[in-house]
Length: 337
Image (cartoon, rainbow, N blue to C red):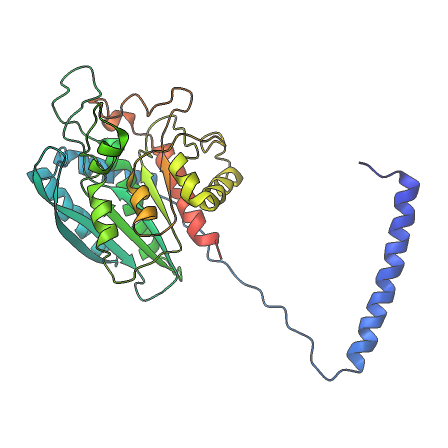
């Protein structure tokens, strides 16, 4: 509704007169009061760092160059050492949580959850996660279904964004605690015609183990963000269903910030179905509200075409996507109260 011109002028005049009376009243009140006026304190927020997509891209390539990071392989062991040393070099306190787990096909592995802490003594904490292993088979491909693939996006991209973020925070003066957990053996789950209840818990073995054996007694974070497939070209990040069920307020917060940053065409205001990913167990077993930022094609009701396929290699990686996701996380950390 738009006010008419004359009516608006009358209101303005009345408001101006009221303000003059208020100022005079406040002035007289201050003259009779010995209490000094309250000082206005300007709070200077730390500037948000500029996320370096080139650095994140190089981290993905380094992981891919080791080969598929399948549990029990040399590539898996070498990549674990690389990630631990990287995080340590940025001044973070790093530990590897080892645990013995059995996969759905009866094999036994020693998992390596890589846990890095920024300002570990602070109680106010945010949890950032991704999985760093790769699926042993390209079982959703049309060829060579029994052979491994690079996992540049599915595994590599989320890890790389968090490693670069660790570098940025290590050089910053951010006064809050941040934990990065790179979960192992996420992608060794059963994909079959069996019921969902039977196969669901065959996935995400690293996050299930961590949630049952927290790296610190009573560990808690205000909220968590999981990254999964966040480096591909033309990404679509809907509001993932499990995230909405357990942490709808966090979803709305992150997607709202993304929209303010101009990322609304990618962080779309649509829900996807509930998925089984590491955040499920962070929510249900560790009781920490955690959301999943994951590339999912809503119109196709499926993940991108390269999901669990040999085409998940460096060719699908887009630095612009890495920049967007990384900058969003930095904005969240540096602007929230």
